[in-house]
Image (cartoon, rainbow over all chains, first blue to last red; front, side):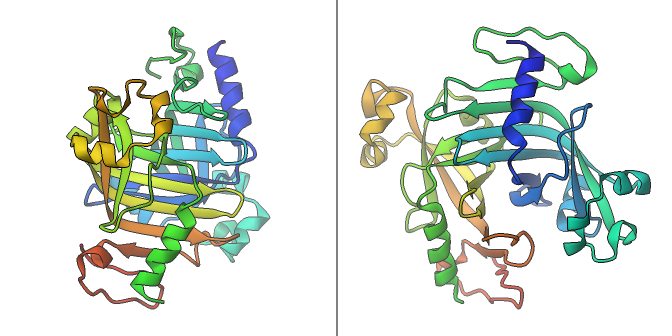
Length: 165
Length: 165
């Protein structure tokens, strides 16, 4: 199994999951999660993109602590995915318009030009997945952002890949 | 709606979810999650109990940073639950035997007396849930550990309860 096939598997596992849980760290160091809709597939650079309001609580949380986790769960297929990453708020209007979808009007009635529309970009630094029933321990596969930076990493015995992007 | 009924609803939402995602903070401040089996219902004091190995990576993570999150997702019913809490490792043999279930032999072949068997206790400090389709924003209900300590808290307009346990 190569890094690339791990990554393809990862993308396959998350593609039908509408809502994931985004976990952030608040000003008291408490961890909070909330369901978020992933606007699009992870991009070719290993970034996840979410729409959010720049006035939201999570926007101020990631400004203080950018370290976040995104968990994907499909209870029917028993898919469990953990993405560790660094989050930042992106207000670039071109990018907002590029990723905009009509369904977002439910949250931003004035459309992509609404003043508080922003993107929450999560740069993946590590991902792990657990696939199938009773796989809590044995089948965990992790990979890191190295596959997006072209650095080579070793695939260990236990199918965990360690390295730094 | 009272605190107690929020709490009953919360317990109802998590009772059929086999695996949740436990998010911990590692030594680099990165957030990792992994599927965990909740051994029993939340107890009458608002604690979640998990079995773990005292040699596991998460055991050393919570020693350094006890702040954790536990996310419950039921994709079929569209239930999303976030529990913020403080975790600690419990090695009390009586408690281990009290919560032990035969299925745990898959992870601890020597049974409850195996040297590295431990409990990971998460004391809930805040919980929020989102119930039903398209409820990402409007129907979030949060409640805090006050219901376990007997302190009275106010139920706000937006159905969020703030307070400290």
